[in-house]
Amino acid sequence: MTDSRILVDLDALAANHAALRARAGGAEVAPAVKANGYGLGAAAVADRLWAEGARSFYVARLSEGVALRAALGDRAATIHVLDGATPGSGDALEGANLVPVLNSLPQVEAWNSRARGRRLKAALHIDTGMNRLGLRLEELKVLVGAVDRLKGLEIDLVVSHLACADTPDHPLNARQLERFQEAVALLPDARRSLANSAGLFLGEAYRFDQARPGISLYGGGPEGRPHPEIRAVATVEAPILQVRVVPRGESIGYGAGWTAPDTTRVAIVAAGYADGVPRAAYPKGAVWFDGARRPMLGRVSMDLIAVDITDCDAALPGAMVELIGPHLPVDEAAEAAGTSAYELLTRTSARATRVLR
Ligand SMILES: *Cc1c(COP(=O)(O)O)cnc(C)c1O
Image (cartoon, rainbow, N blue to C red; front, side, top):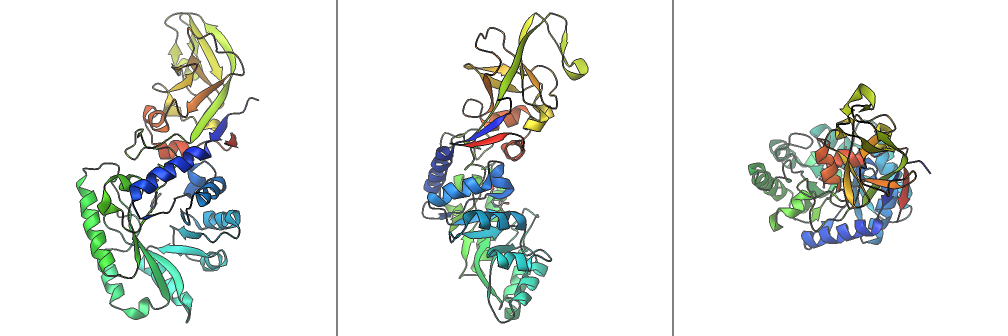
């Protein structure tokens, strides 16, 4: 067994779901399972979250929605597609019973005219300050003043997304909250959804009727660092291939990027770019093995890294080291590589075996 593997702790996922539900008060928790469940496997994640009581899910792409519908089979889940009603997607959206999150006036128009006497379910995405997707407040005002433009739609949910929720005292949070309140007042019959994971930690005012957490379900803290209520879900492991002694003055790896200041015991680990280790993991990155962090030595290769195992007798070929997991939180591994938990998780390897526990 020389493949890296990703252990997905579904009980930890369920525990995080429960923690976020507690944070949400009475609001619904609708998991974001886009990007293959943040790299952990959307079908397995959604299956367990359904068992934990989740009934609405968010994906980004139409294709993700179609795949999730197939995975959930006859379970009556609501699946929201954040890309919305993109050109040409109508048949597939309806065919898989997906709810588009309409995010521009042309999308509203397209979905409304598709209805032809029916009423099609939709969520409406309002931009409250992120300037990514969503109708501006002025556009919403025009829309609600022209009933014909909405009469084919059953808008059951108004959504907006926070740009700075991971920075609780950022002034944009309060400004977005204010604009969101203004927006939802124009559609008083629709349910309201504002908070992502971090938004759930901003306080009651941000809860509304539904929250859409992603990263904290999967083990990332709401502020980009570990949080006591959030457990590690993914453990990424790879085996040691060999142990060698590098004499003083010799270097390791491509570019001779690290030179031994002293004779150094080194483990060569079967993990590299293709296993989701980013190039920038060196020089600050480490793995966890036998009770301690073991620093990476030299440049990451396609399939290999080297780590310092001086004074560690347990390092033998076949032993598994932890790249991300309960001892090396995804937020800390991300920080060391100058990236985020989002990127590390979604870039976990396709080559790695996923093992559900
Ligand atoms: C990805 C996403 C979420 C989930 O965000 P997290 O920060 O992962 O909790 C919620 N809402 C929207 C619109 C998103 O794009």
